[in-house]
Image (cartoon, rainbow, N blue to C red; front, top):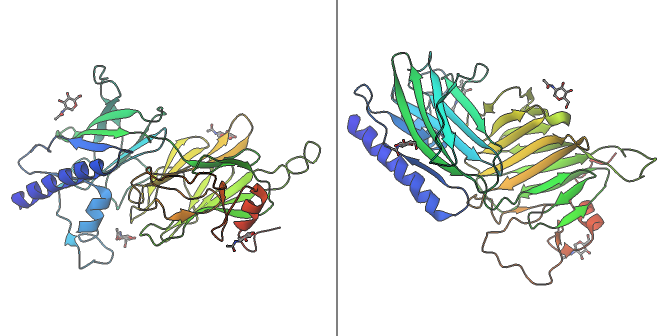
Length: 367
Ligand SMILES: *[C@@H]1O[C@H](CO)[C@@H](O)[C@H](O)[C@H]1NC(C)=O
Ligand SMILES: *[C@@H]1O[C@H](CO)[C@@H](O)[C@H](O)[C@H]1NC(C)=O
Ligand SMILES: *[C@@H]1O[C@H](CO)[C@@H](O)[C@H](O)[C@H]1NC(C)=O
Ligand SMILES: *[C@@H]1O[C@H](CO)[C@@H](O)[C@H](O)[C@H]1NC(C)=O
C-alpha cells in the first residue's frame, strides 16, 4: 500500500509540472513531497485528478462507481487552486478526516524575501465537500501576472500535515470578455461595443465539441431613464450553464446554483463548478477542470452589474466558443488584417454592433 501511494504522489507532481510547460498562462506548481508525519504517507492531489481515479463515495452512501478505485481511508488530502485576473482561490479537503477538529494554516507572499507569519483558517462551517472537512480561502486582489506563493499545512492539536508550497500566477495576459454599464461589451479580441437590445443574448457558448460545455447569456432590463436617454439599458441578470449545472446571476452579485442561493463557497460534487464569494456583491464562478471563470459583481460607481468571462489559455475551450464576445483564439493566432470585428451567429463578420446583438438574441426572450 505504502509504495502505491508514493508512486501516485510522484505521478501527480509530475503531472502538475508537466502541464505547466504546455502553456505560459497560469502556472501552478507544487514543490515538496509530502512528509510522513506518523508513519503513513499522505497523498495530496488536485481534486479533479482525485475524482478521475477514486470513488469518493465508496466508503459512504451513494452509488458505487465500479470503474473507480475505492478511496483509501485516512490517507488522502485533495486541493483546488485556481486564479482569475485578480483573485486566487485555494481550497483543501481533508479526506483523511484527521483534521476534523483542526484548521488550515497558510502564508502567502509575492516576494520570497518577505515571508509573512502563518494565518489560521477555520473549517468552512457551511460547506463541506462530500462530508469531509473543507477549508476555503480567497487571496487577492492582485495585479494580473502576479506570481503568488502559498505555503500551507493542516494542523490539529495532535500534529500537522504539510500540503506544500504552491506557486500560481494570476491570469497573464488578463484578457476576459466582459459586459457592464450601459451595456458596454468588450469581446475576447478586445473590440468594444455598445448594445442596448431589450432581450437576452448569448455572450459565449461552446460551438465545437468539447468535454467542457459552457453557455453564458446576459439579460438586458428595462430602459433605465427615459429622461436621460431613451435607449440605455443595463445587464439585469445572466445565466450560466455547464454540464448539468445552472447558475442564475442576479442583481447585487447574488448567485443561485441549481436553484439554491449561494451564501458561502460551494463546489459541485463533480467538482465542475465552484463559487467563491469574494466580498458583498462580488462572486467568482470557476471551473478548475474546464479552466474558465466568471466574475459577477456590481460596479459601486454606476450601480450597474458587471460580468467578466475568462478562459485560460490552456482550456479545452480555446478556439471552441462563439457568441457576442467572439472567438477565443489561441495566443499564437494570427488575426487576419482588415477582417471585420464582430462575429455573427451564422459565422459571418460585421462592424455593426446592432447586427451583432440581434444575431445572438435568445429566441423567445424579447419582452
Ligand atoms: C516552502 O516555502 C518556505 C517559504 O518560502 C520555505 O521556507 C521552505 O523551504 C519551502 N519548502 C520547500 C520544500 O520548498
Ligand atoms: C456521493 O454520494 C452522494 C449521496 O448519494 C451524492 O449526492 C454525490 O453526488 C456523490 N458524489 C459523487 C462524486 O459521486
Ligand atoms: C451588501 O451590499 C448591499 C448593496 O449592494 C447592501 O444593501 C447590503 O447592506 C450589503 N451587506 C453587507 C453585509 O454589507
Ligand atoms: C449572416 O447574417 C447576416 C445578417 O444577419 C447576413 O448579412 C449575411 O449574409 C449572413 N451570412 C451568411 C453566410 O449567411
